[in-house]
Length: 160
Image (cartoon, rainbow, N blue to C red; front, side, top):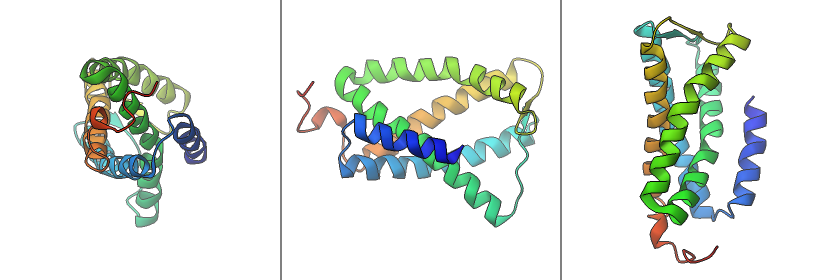
């Protein structure tokens, strides 16, 4: 899966015409969200909202973290372009869309690969998963923005 996400990352870098500052910022945002993601998975496991089997070996945790970082990094290059083109409202719409489509995506993966993840019954796991998706976008975008600065102040802002 990580290899597929790496291919996606290369495509997103190309199609968003990301500068080196934005790429570095997106990776740093991804690194922050990798920590958030591990914590969210551990918290969901502890609260029994879901069960994600994670081996607590340094090798597995490092690979899992790397996979999280690579899988979320393209999101911040896209949110950068959305914020640049549509401002805060565009970013807010994107966050709402992610919160709505994220849980069904995870439930589909859980149904297809139950050895990867199992959700507890009820609404609480769905809401917790949606909150995790919102956190992934908001935290990563905010951290990414620290490197290249706000997208609205980009010197190429008027470019279409």
